[in-house]
Length: 176
Length: 209
Image 1: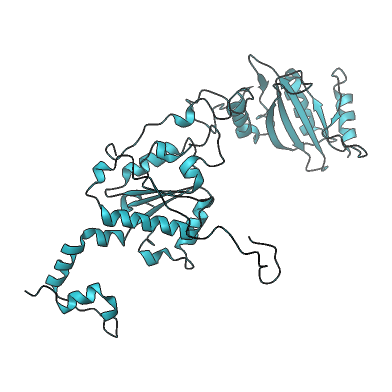
Image 2 (image 1 turned 90 degrees about the horizontal axis):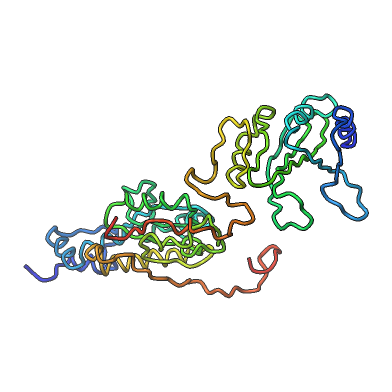
């Protein structure tokens, strides 16, 4: 099952959506074999359920869920891209799905109902990028603590932080 | 009472021990010995470290305690993972922002007298990890007595740091503990020359490792 057949299966099932598969990497002289498709947040759960269940696609595994901040990225039109890496254990093919969202309320639907393994990955994206996942059962920060004010992997967050690493009590010989 | 007994000479001159390495003495000679050398002489030869190892410095710390470098020669082989039982805190590795309160609590739980070694570039300055998530030197928030430089330090350098702590204990002990404030902040020097020979390793291999 080649990736092109996955795209054609999507075109048959969702003819109303614009399908524009693009290669992940373009190298001169090489035939691309890894493709990504863009998807609007409104139809995400519907299409993802189809990709998992259809016998021609069978993406049983969500191997990764991450995010990219495209702030000041050349040619980018949207701020955030939530990226889903899908793997079919039956057919051995892969597909990447990108879902673009923007400020001030970046939100995508949660896919925990489709792949339970998305739970902590969505919490990490929420922690690091501040993207809310509607319908997530337990959307809390996972790496930083609850009182942490920022989302550190956003491009407008300074690399050295906003004083979090200097914000401690000074323990001396007299006080300890 | 004579000013110096034969047993007393044995204590100060180990080569005068008997052939079987058996030491015999009298109790009053021992008391006299401690009166002159102080309890710090005993204390400095039995520092019990707490290995707070969070990164590759911890590997060198383990090597220091293992047979090749043998920290037991200096009486510090008893690694204690409970702060209640340790008197030397060795912070080996980078300290993340979530780890700093843990480290401070561990320091507070240690009983006096206690000393702190900041081992390696990350614990001392943050090292290459100049990011929001890494504390840029534990000495900002914790008393540090001895810095051990290196990335990571070789075991010889860490042993030099332990010996520096021993000299501090011998000189001051716990008498000035309350006056130490934010620590002595001494820096030891690497004891191994930084130049390495270009001779190839036995069995092929490349240049210096």
